[in-house]
Picture 1 (cartoon, helix red, strand yellow):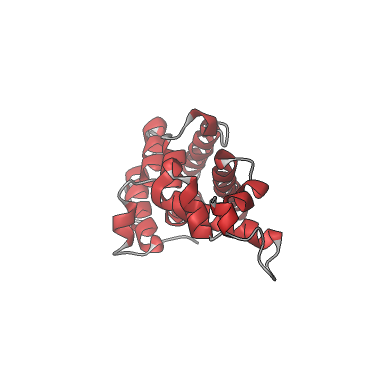
Picture 2 (cartoon, rainbow, N blue to C red; picture 1 turned 60 degrees about the horizontal axis):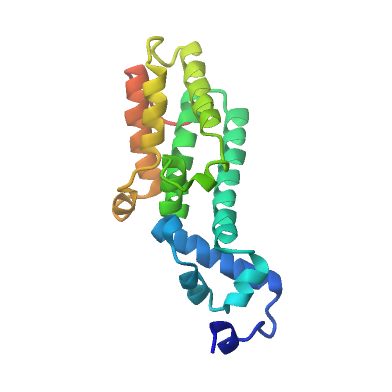
Length: 205
């Protein structure tokens, strides 16, 4: 007897959209823990549904996992646009994007580390344009130089590389057991900005 035969196709009082959301959240939690190597059967078990429920909403495992990845990437893209449009000071933009990077690791775990760190299967490579992200970070640093906040001799390529590394740390889970996302992001931002400007910064405006 299959798992789908053991479990009902639907549940009284539970809509198809609610079942889909349950599957999505189960996949999100598992991907945060195990990354893209996660087993879809564990998603099914966590969601408390049959396999048929999963495949009626998502064509296959890859489609389910990709939908979670797309949510993270879209959240990041929208937030980046909000940050640069709402804040002129480059230091504030650096602080808020740094915080967003750590929030992604908190909320999406291994998935965020794999995607933004480049350790993902080739089929996920089209989810976001890494060169565009690098250009975004580079533009913010150049804005800071123009504003007089950052040294004009900053090594842009190195700074952008450090930015990626600092916002997707492999040991973040252990750090999170002792500190909040805000505390980690604040300490990392101070460390990063000190390297760009050589002076202490008090915080976002």
